[in-house]
Structures are given as C-alpha cells and as structure tokens.
Length: 91
Image (tube, rainbow, N blue to C red; front, side):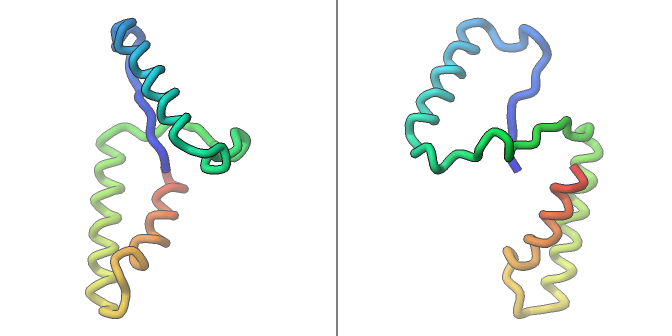
C-alpha cells in the first residue's frame, strides 16, 4: 500500500508545490530504476472516508491480537500478513 497527498485545489502554495516536486525528484534519484514498480502495475483508486478507514484498521488490530492469543507460535508479522492483504483489497 502506498499513500499520496489528497488536498483541495490551491491547498498548497505554489512555493510548497515546487518544493514537493523537488523532493519527489530527489527521492527518485536516490533509488535505482529497478526499485520502482512499472506504471502498469500501479492501481490508483479513491480510499474510503476517514471514519470507515478507522473502523477497518481498528478491526484489523483486534483480529490480529485475537489470532496471536490463540496461536503463540505466530509472529505479529505472520498474523498481520493475510489480514493486511484482505484489508488492502477492501480499500
């Protein structure tokens, strides 16, 4: 999952927009081309409203904790992985 800035038009001043462009450019220069996803592999879409996101994320943490309590051999990462993948699909 990745994130981006979502703001109303003119939310950022022209100067700040310019600084963000430079920052993005510098970040792109810090990595080899192989580190980037091909554009056709990137699926951009709108995310749900904040209250729905909070509910889903809170539910994820509760499900992970329940799973960890039921199976003491699991690491947190192992418990989160399948649930996190499902969460990504639901967003």
